[in-house]
Image (tube, rainbow, N blue to C red; front, side, top):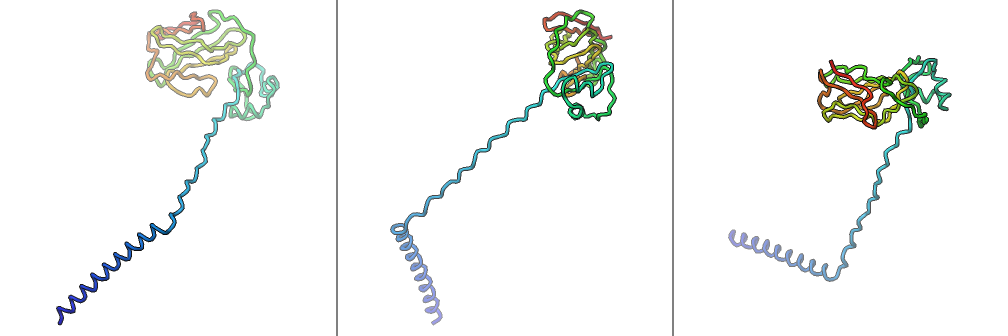
Length: 222
């Protein structure tokens, strides 16, 4: 009696499974034949992102302070405000100016009358930190009249290593130092060559050439 009961349970289970499979097959076939297909999924177009162009740097130029200059007289000379000069240089309106100090002035640099440059008007004053990359720099001083644009001038070691100056105006008595190491040219008295080794060891000869290649100053590192 017990065995027959177990057989009945097995038969009922099998019958239920077969019925379920048949019902699933029939419903699947009927759905594919008579039900409408699901609507297609529409892709949502993403708007193209256009990068903003970089903000251009406003024009500015370097002015070297002369005897008797004040922020007010300089501002009046170039038609700008004292506040703009102070903001550009990070100084206060009551800041005292030193003769030979470089100031950034907003606006386009006035076109100066070209001046003839002679040997002796500009000199290589000294090479500081010679042979040590972190300290090495060449100090150059202009002693001529008027203003001198160093753009296109070159420092040459005579062995193929050449530094070419960007646009930089020097007033009488103005000076600039060219560092051998890398850095940002964000001051009016410091320029950076970007070399990974020292260029001016003791005994090296530094030559300063004009844009035509003429040697205008020379210095031997002691």
